[in-house]
Image (cartoon, one colour):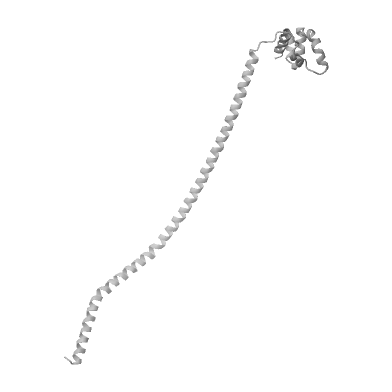
Length: 192
């Protein structure tokens, strides 16, 4: 057993058996690699055919999404404008309602004034009709003259009238008699 040729031949035989075992196990792996390469090739062909249209579809979808976004923003803006118009319309309606309220009040006041004017008793004499056009001071002088009171009070009020005092102010100071006050109140009620 110490022959080196024997050992050399045995080693070569073992190496040959090992290589054969490796080659036998390598054949299915190479076949699997070939099948994988064919699959990769088919995938590459499929991708080269399908990927550009898919990319184009994705690009078109992005464009459509941007257009839809623009449409939505325009819709929101138009809705905002509609809300502003409605707000303006409500403001205008409020103003018109206030104007109607003021007009209604004016009409009611006019109707009340007309009703009072129609239901008022007509003046009794021509002197009263003339006194309606006169100022209040002229009315009092006219009513004093018509009632004959001017003669009774000319002495009392004459001194005050010369220094610029109003006869009414002098009359409000009082002359001391109860009859004077009653006559003065009667003249005052005739004025109003």
